[in-house]
Image 1 (cartoon, rainbow, N blue to C red):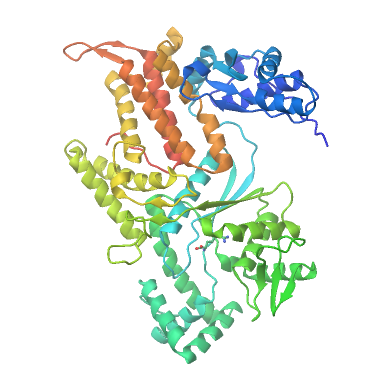
Image 2 (image 1 turned 180 degrees about the vertical axis):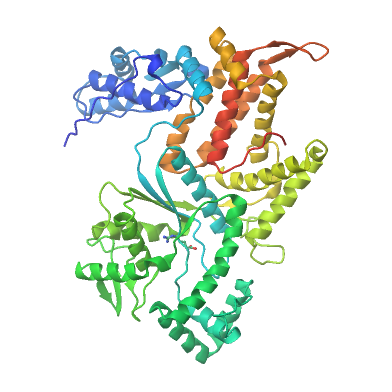
Length: 608
Ligand code: ARG
């Protein structure tokens, strides 16, 4: 069936444009109008707009629709060729203040050249009003991330989930989305039975005196050992689970105590990395699991499979793996808990988009959860489930990340090592002699946590990645250190010129802001892409594109700064000339870099 699409409203007047305009979206609108009027009979014609790449010969953006349309027409027995189609589209393209000119080139490409005056206006807006988010329909978005398990190690996989999840929340929050950050703690497994049984033996007065189980790991190991070796203990552990799950007060007290010890450990990591998240573990869904199981049973979705109750995502094909909703002993599973969770997020939280950030290994789990939730009518058609998967962290030897002695690495130790290495690096550069102790400490933390976050976020998250302090602390290449230095250098240009933002605004307004040098124009065009980069990552949730963009800004800026001086000094070092347009480009560059780093969860410093 043909859907009648609303004709997009186009920008006709520069003065109506703000600093947050998304050029790519506007170009798509322009070409949608052009193509649908050139070929009114084509259903859903492809509107393909891309960046033209590095060669200025091909324009700034290009429309590649002509090739595909020509194929479609040929399939309908209409004789044509891509160049002819491109020319037809060109003839129907409405004029736009964004576009200087369009050329048909090569096999039928439409090369689009941006209008300088428009760019000057947009940069002016950013200077006057700051970096504003492009408009996006507001949605309620639940982001499930970090989510370590109580009493077990919070490992590097959880660190990845924490860093990626936080950055996803940040970009969505910047875009004014209604974001709920949820820490889906594993706080309700059968492991609590053995933990509680062990606690009862070791610290019988735990109800009145908080036992010193600071090393919950060790405590966990001891209880696991007893569980595996001692039949009596095992029986008691099972009885403890039953008591806990039926809400027996003493057991709840013991359980809360254990959870609290873990939580305090997790919180140390969150505080260091500046992560805000709401704890809502699996236990929160305990009674909701009963409800969802009953509903699934009543709805006829569950099948008996040798005593356990299972549910298929696809009732027809019956291939793949089913969910285990009730085990043969009557207990619930990770699947049951995620069915209750998604139902709660749909019905109580009223979410539109449900994002889960876990290791790639859980991909299938979430595919089946989604399929079952759709099948049971819990999820409605407009609602989206997205699994944000990521690869494993490897050591420099490309093997599983471990300490030299082969133990798993404690996250706190890892962060401490980051701090130490960051300080070494700063001292190596002699920064300790220039900065105040306070500035040095800020720089150290910004570098340490920034480099760990950036190393993670700058790689395509689906791939495994090699954790290497040497690489992430390198000040050349696409690293946080390089970007933080670049930013402070840009900031220092305005400092040498001794010009305030207000003065800059007055001066630029006086002369009218004009981009003259080629390198200025090139930098301007990169800066103008901020809205489209932000919209892209908020949609596909691949944060590395934002990192690549940051790196591109920084290298384009370097190119600009090599060719275009901003402040001219005489032999005595006295300022003889300031080029305000260029200072303004510095300011806009710094602001966009700061905003991008902020979205990546990286703190910036004014000096380092
Ligand atoms: N606790 C799980 C783990 O450590 C992650 C939980 C992810 N969220 C969820 N709703 N299943 O792997």
